[in-house]
Length: 490
Image 1 (cartoon, one colour):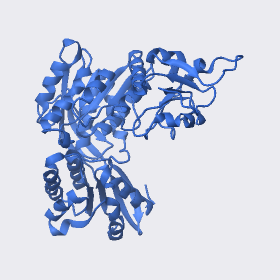
Image 2 (cartoon, one colour):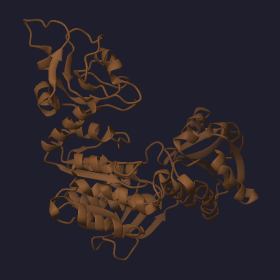
Image 3 (cartoon, helix red, strand yellow):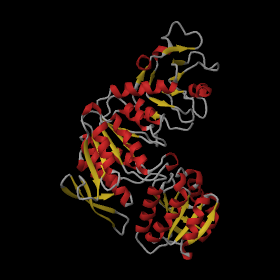
Image 4 (cartoon, rainbow, N blue to C red):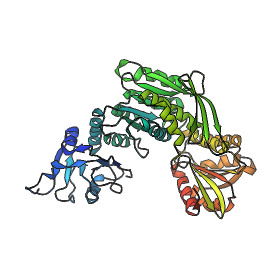
C-alpha cells in the first residue's frame, strides 16, 4: 500500500488520547525499564502514516490490512522512528519496548481516531466530490483559504475508505478549515465517509459518465454523488453545478438529506443566469495568462487564473462558493487563485528541449473519464499560437457497455478543438483514431509507453503536446519517459 504520511509538526496525539479515542490497549513487548516512564504510555505523535517507505520519525504507523498486511511492516516502522503502532496483533518481530496501541480492527481504530479528531476541532470542514475535478478543486480550495486561516488537507488524492479517515485522523485541533476529497466507484461508498467527516459545506464539481461499469445510468451516478449530503451538518451549505442536467436531483437530495432535518442552503455555479456564481467570460491572454469575468453573489469581478482551461475556471467558481460559505475572505481567495499553478498529472505545463527542439508538455496523465478528457482536449485547442497541438490519449476505464461509444465520441471533440495530431494507446482508442481525418491520425500502440520513441522523433520546435488517459494505459509512464529524454527549460 502506497500512501503519503501526514506530518503536522506539533504533537496531535498522546498515548492516552489515542487510547481513549479508539478504546484500545496500550502495551509493549518485553520488560520495561522500571526507572523510566512506561514506553507504551509516554509517547506522543505528530503525524500518521500507513506506509513505512514514507513514514517520518514521531508518527503513528497504522497497520492496515489491504493488498498487503501492514503488520508485516511494523518492525520497519519502528526502525524508521515511528512513535507508536496501531495494530490488531503484536507481530513477533516487534522491537523490545516498542509502544503499541492494540485494537480489534485497525481500520475501525483509524476511523475512531478520525471521529475524535473531528469532534475536538471547531474549524469549518468542507467535503468535495464529483465525476471530475475533485483533486484540482481541493488544491484550489487549499490555496484560496490559506490567507483566511490554518488549512488542513491531504497532499495526495486520499478519497477512499482509508484515505478519508487517514486525512481526518491527522486533523489538528486548531485547524480553521479542513478539506476532504471523497470519491467512489460504487453506490453506497460516499455515505459512510460523509457521515465520518460531517462537513459544514459539501461541493459537487460535476456529474458525468464515470465508473459506468458499476452504474446503470449517469442519473444513478448523480444519486451516488448526492450521498455526500448524508453527512452535511445542520444548516450546512451545498455548492452545486447549475449547468449540469442533474442539478435538480442534487438540489433535491441536498434539501432532503442534510442533517438536523433542515434543508441545506444551496449555492450554484456555472454559466446559467440563475447561478449564484456565474461565469460571464473566460479568456486567455497571449502570455499564457487566463482571465475570468464572473458575477459572484451579485457583484461582478474580473480575476486572473493560474490554471488553464474553462473547466478549471468553473472549478474556481465552486471553490469561491465554498470559501464564502466557510467564512473565508473572497478577495484574498481570488488573489490566491491567480497565483496557483497546476500540479503534476493535472495540467502541469513544462517546457522541454528534445532533440534540440523546444516543446511544451501538458501533463494531464492522472487518470481520465469522458468529462475530464473532453475538458483537456478543449483546453489544448484553446492554447494560443500557431504551434502544432498534439494529443496523446490512453484508454478510459470502468465505462461499462457505453465504453466503445464514449471512446469513439472523442473524435468529435478533437476535430472541434482543432487538434493537429492525435496519438492513441489501447484497443478502445483504435476505432477513435481511425475515425479521425487522415491528416490528424498519428501512431497507435497497445500502451502509451510504446509511443514514446516515435513521438519523440517526430516533434518539431514549438509543438504543444498534451497527454491524458487512465492509469492502466500507462500515459503517466509516457510522460516520465519523455521527460527523461529531454532537458528541462522551465
